[in-house]
Amino acid sequence: MTRFALALEFDGSPFMGFQRQAHGLTVQQAIEDALQRITGEQVTLHAAGRTDAGVHALAMRAHCDIERAITPFRLMEAVNALVRPHPIAVLSCEEVADDWHARFSCVGRRYLYRIACRRAPLTLDARRAWRLSPPLDAEAMADAASVLVGRHDFTTFRSVHCQAQSPVKTLDSLEVTSTDGEIHIRAAARSFLHHQVRSMVGCLALVGRGKWSRSDLSLALEARDRSKLGFNAPPDGLYFVRAVYPGEIE
Amino acid sequence: MTRFALALEFDGSPFMGFQRQAHGLTVQQAIEDALQRITGEQVTLHAAGRTDAGVHALAMRAHCDIERAITPFRLMEAVNALVRPHPIAVLSCEEVADDWHARFSCVGRRYLYRIACRRAPLTLDARRAWRLSPPLDAEAMADAASVLVGRHDFTTFRSVHCQAQSPVKTLDSLEVTSTDGEIHIRAAARSFLHHQVRSMVGCLALVGRGKWSRSDLSLALEARDRSKLGFNAPPDGLYFVRAVYPGEIE
Image (cartoon, rainbow over all chains, first blue to last red; front, side, top):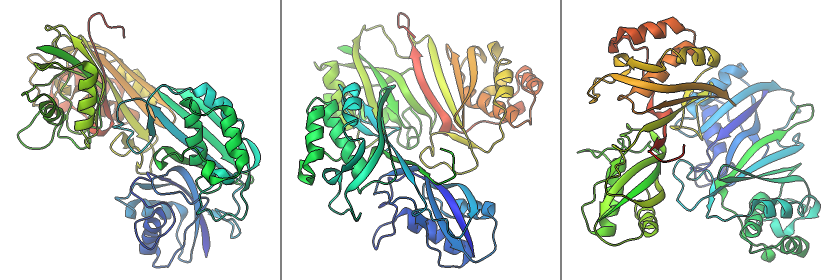
């Protein structure tokens, strides 16, 4: 048995999320189906994160165990060939130790959220960004974002379907930058609650629109009450950027 | 009668090109259909360039004449609402003088060609870039590109279907830059022959692959013979970036 670690890029728009479901195509299912055709084995894919329907990944990390002898390069090429026409690509593949786990060994997750500040509908970026009409005050958003950084009870920013044991998480950073008609929000933490990034982005958008102040955001956080959430941003603009593992350079 | 100038963005992948055709959906038809529903008039759209099937636009310029009284803002909003679900957006709309012509007043066209240098299939950038496996020598491509700049007979780089009266064109610039896993080729001229940008990019890719030298490209140009073309790049990576008009700041 060999354990392989994969880096996956995917366009999340046609999928019902990462995790295998009883109904609807998921990223996990599309890749597991390809792995079964390649190896003849029932292969299970474990990923660093379970992205929602419509959420994209630039480099999701995942692992699987395979009995049959195959090189990492052959495995990558075969998955890329067989997973078509689904918009999934294996960017890299390597053998790892049997105790390396894409989810449990992961010590950091990085997300990017893209807001397109324009009135016109999106064409080339349709389903790849959240379109919001200007004006949007990126400086106010950047200032308010600092309220959320640190160790907090993020119950307000947590989906009712969240399976995490505790709502307390440490948000390492939440950066808002403005560039060429877009606002980019980058979030870093060891782990996130379900819908946490989208919920934080939705509230920051209210700040950008001038509907919420920095202290409104602070009150929402302190309320520890999902009903105090301002807005949950759509999945379209969300990208899982990378997973961090001990010994890997960021 | 009022003449309106529009700036159009579109994802070219689902269209049979810009220009109206007897069979197959085109950008022109989708917009003209929307204009007819808005005005009740048979409106003809004139554009700065006739992009091929699969070619995108970040800001194609076009104009149309409308009898009915309507503000530029209302017209823009109505087209954006009615052109859905086609991936076309009107980015701006303004009244212009009756002798302003999107095609004949245009004194410069700018194109961008995106090459994604990677082995893995494209997912988020599928149909938005040309994927080529590395290595690709961007410096050699940049050096060779200078061979094509200036006034030349571009017969080698011209489609057999090209309707231009003369194959002699002046290429103002052809810049090759390398950035974050992509090679960008930017072409500027008053006007281009049919397939000229894609033909130039295809030959530059041969240079990048080490299959052609700078002098091979020079010989192909001097041959003035379509059969000496190395390769015609696919439409996926091509973007009409902007049209230049007298008095507008670039």
